[in-house]
Length: 230
Image 1: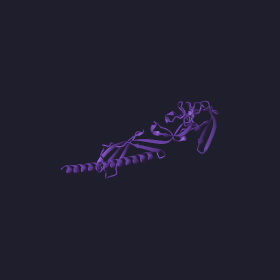
Image 2: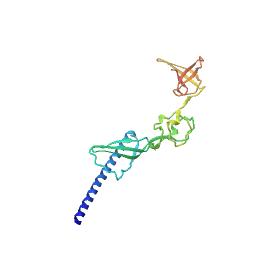
Image 3: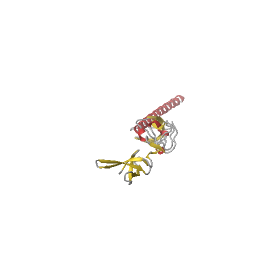
Image 4: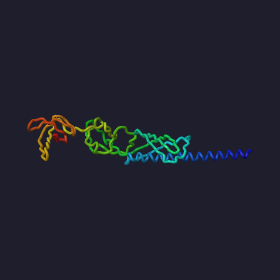
């Protein structure tokens, strides 16, 4: 009798351990697939970045049945480092939520030196630094051409990530500046001298006095010293 009970207990223990091993393998397989999915997901969004995924392990109490169809994943990320991921199995039907932390490192433009309010940014004022963008808030820049020639809206310290709300179009023509007024009619371009009656940024329309006729016209600022009539 005792021997029979011991045999039964041994069989039950072996069965329990076998089930536990299978369930642990199912969990590990799902975690591997989830991490691979997140890696590919963020790499497609940021192809030039270095992506590091740290997936939080499933609770050991979670008992997953092997899925007979490919598990479908749906991520939810608000732009920070924390990611939630929903995993769905259609056969047999089950659903579970997973969490992970992502680090996305890519070149971002930062100030190379202190910048004063109103100062126009030049190439030597900016440097590209590898930065984890999940720590950033607001629009940042990766291309020099997007910020060179723009003016700082406030004082910026050296080593500061440059964001869109820190910059404005630079004033390229000042009031009372001597300018060239350019008028184009078909294939004919006429140029004459003038005086700006108001400061203006590139692309902005300002009043300009024609120095020869004294007539005041409106013209668009093209570049320092050059305006063009519409």
